[in-house]
Amino acid sequence: MKQYFTCTCILLSLLFTLPSCSTKNAGENDQTLKPQSLGCLLVLPTSTTVDSSAKMTFQEAEQLQRGAQFINTVLTAEIGGREIVRIVDESQLDAFFPEAVKGGKTGVINALGKSLDCEAVMLPVVSRFNQRKGGALSVDEPASAAFELKIIDTRDGKILC
Image 1: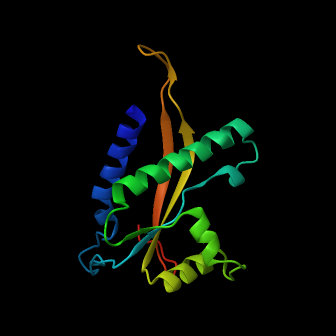
Image 2: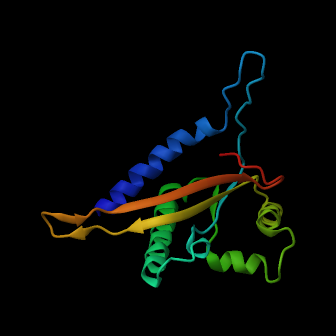
C-alpha cells in the first residue's frame, strides 16, 4: 500500500511538471516555444532495461518485470480515464503490427500514431525496482524505483518531454 501511495505521488508530481517540459526558456533574442495541445496521447506498455545490461541476474530482471507491471497499473489508474489518453497493452500492440515495421522504434511510433490518429506516445521505461524488505516496525532495505517517461511526437519522432 505504501508503494502504491509513493508511486502515485511521484506520478502526480510528474503530471504537474510535464507542462514545464513543453516550453523552453529562451534568451532575450530567441523566441519562446509555445506548448502544444495534444488531441491524443498513447501510453505504451512499460519496458525495462533488461536487454541493455549484460550483468543483470534473472532475479533482477524479474524484479524489473514486476516493476513494469506495477507502473502500468498505476498509469492506467491515474491517467487512463482521461479523454485524450489511450492505454495500449502488449496484446493490442502485437495486434497492430503482425509483421515487422521499417524504421525501428521511430517507425513503430509513426505507424502507431497514424493508425490510432494520435499526436504523441508516452514511453515508460523502468530501470530499477526493489520491494521493501523488513518487518512491520523496521526496514532492512527500503523500496526504490527508477523510471523515465518520454513523450514522443508520432509525426517526426522528436522528444516532446
